[in-house]
Amino acid sequence: MATTGVREFKNYIAGEWVDAASGDTFESTSPADGEVIGTFPKSGPEDVDRAVEAAKAAYEEWRLVPAPKRGEILFRFAELLKEHKADLTELMTHEMGKVKAEAGGDVQEAIDMSYYMGGEGRRLFGHTTPSELRDKFNMSVRMPIGVVGVITPWNFPIAIPSWKIVPALVCGNTVVFKPATDTPSLGESFVELLTEAGIPAGVVNIVHGGGGAVGDRLVRHPDVPVITLTGSRETGVAVLEAAAENLKHVHLELGGKNGIIVMDDADLDLAVDGIIWSAFGTSGQRCTAASRVIAHEKIYDALQKRLVAAAEKMRLGPGWEDETDVGPVINAPALEKIHSYTEIGEGEGAKLLTGGEIATGNGLDKGFFYPPTIFADVEPDMRIAQEEIFGPTTALIPVTDFDEAIRVANGIRYGLSSSIFTQDVNRAFRAMRDLNSGITYINAGTIGAEVHLPFGGTKETGNGHREAGQAALDVFTEWKSVYVDYSATLQRAQIDNVE
Image 1 (cartoon, rainbow, N blue to C red):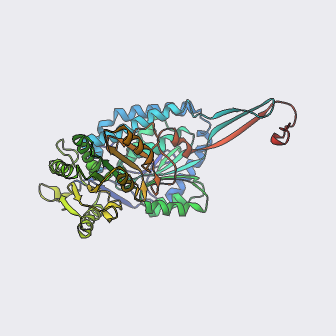
Image 2: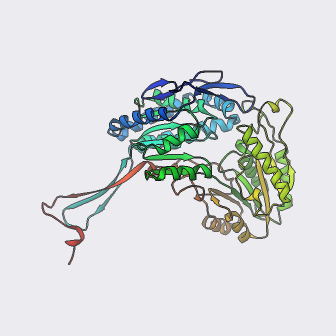
Image 3: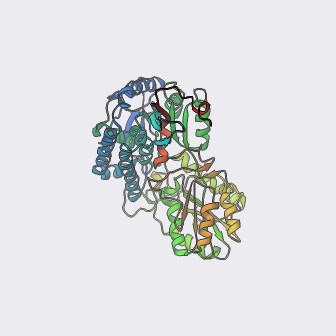
């Protein structure tokens, strides 16, 4: 399995490593220093068609493999992820840019998910119910659907593929996987280990390339009944529109504009730790990142000072260096977008407390680095308080009381993650009830989900589905109701069920 250094990669289709039909390639480079990680097939629709054909053929046998046996393969996959965790972590610091601790956490999520979903091979629970008629048995069971198109982002290049591919497989589906073009080596490593674990040829296929050529064909392909995508709201809407003609099952995990509420009774040291971790971890490139801090006016000034002091101590640098706190953002367009929001915030009248300039010097100009950036005196309707920046920027919004804090927290188009720091149990339980989001943390930041609970959001964060936990199984299965009548007579349900 590759770590660093230039290597030529291929698509994996029907159990074979193959070039794109066109022969075209693209490079993956490190956002920290421009290092070339490898070259990859620049695939097109014909490559997708071949992969879908392979997955469709493999489905007929894979769906019949007993679910516990499918789970055993995923258990072996988890063991291989553990064995290669250090290599994958190192590769991620180079190709994606995460610092070591976070890169290791990304891999660990995939390990945890694979163990968890491996266990689902012996559950995949349905339901049994009593019948309203004599001598009749009722049950519902989960059935696989077919070929799943998996489209993943670059910010969690091992974890998110596991959230999608592993439950799809344990349910008996087959997969065509399009990883992000910014992190294709990590996607390929994921598939290499699945193959080593014993996944049969054609069950998992990987096709490298862009969203226009590969992703669009995958979404529109008539033999792909399920699409699961993590990406921007705009991409999600386009996917829904493209998939509508074939009435596909579509699972979307989209944006977030997550807020941390800090009440006047909060432990400020704990709150600062939670905000710094949530706002600037992964350089703010998480859909659960805390890009808003909603602070009670009584502690607003004190919180500002502590946050600025903590942010200014953070060291920028390559993710593979032990002393680095904040790694690069993913690419030049991302860097430009993040900086444009600094200009927007200043133009709106917000007060820039720290950061706000593209980092240079000390070798940082070789990559895409942006320092932790904090705005104060932000109004809830400002663009920097409403729009997803996806970078190391957070906005401090003062409020006068708990009710206003809840209104501000909910006053956005997204509903992914939320948080409150308070020592008042009544406020904590009201926040659990009233915050309109798929995830709520009490006295913790907005990041750090665990694999055995559902992950996803409300409003425009997605389309109602969830990843992780048993909720993920609903994305990748159809419910079938089964009625067994052993009365030896024709019973017509409600027609015969009368007094």
